[in-house]
Image (cartoon, rainbow, N blue to C red; front, side, top):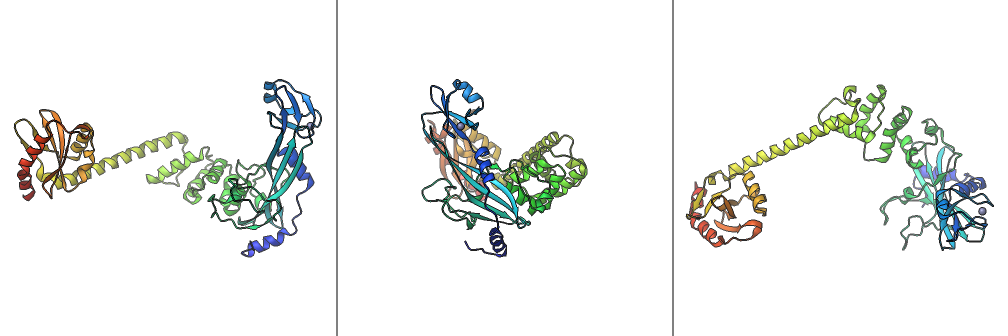
Length: 430
Ligand SMILES: [Zn+2]
């Protein structure tokens, strides 16, 4: 891709004088960023796949429980008991450096192929560079990747050049693939631009990728403040959960900093502040934002919120009940009988819900149907069927017993209701 703007043009220019990765760096990578296999046979013969030396090792448990160094070349080995004779592995290492005022992250892929009994072959390729400006903007140079018929994002095509690449997430993985590349081991000698040095970030990256940490620090000086005031859990949490906006919490965080209040569990504290806001508490008041027992206060507000939710739910139900009463009140008290079976109108949402529950059918949701009247048929205390009548058509839509089955009284119930339709009609006209 051709540089699209001034910044990219400047980086392309600066890159021309970036020295190649050094042998010292690569040698360090081979020693520290890779796992070299010690091939172990069933009989316990271990072969160093680095230098090819073999020896009789200790028992199986010893081989997996203790570190193993080759007695010939002293390489640290990862012992594998396997019939496999050939090994091919790929590792990453990252070199953190500065060049012409930019922070540069160089990703090197280290390749290792070995055959039991032969000297291992090592190779490497610098596959990606990320250039970060002091304002936090960045661009990425990388080799091309094999993307067809491949489920890895990093099948680098080593002979292609490191070129400026577009970073749209408009691909089959729907993500910025360059952000997905492993950091691997980080080369210990690092160079930071002054803007980053100033933040005091040093080498500790809080288990995040250097790219994310640096960009966050350069883009927002409040992140630097968090670091410098020791609010590292907040710092880390904001890097992890990017949906949280520092703006929403900054006023309260400043109160914490001013009061020397260390936030040890950031996600709990964020939730807690969210509750405080919900209940209209003063987010600038240390009394609220710096609780001595965060867990206890958090849980107290959580309970309070649950109660408020339940109360709201009840209120909604009461309003619904009132609406139902207004719509159907003219039918209340309506009942008729043929001497054996009694039928009466259900007079509240609560009653209809209960009917649905006792009869195991779905009449419970019918209270909102404006054209329906719900009645219950019973003998003495025993419920038989639930009847739904269409008010506009003055006809029975359905009559159902327990679990939607009909009772032996089904036809008799239908007859009884049909006979008394005029009563409903009379109430409807009133
Ligand atoms: Zn060896």
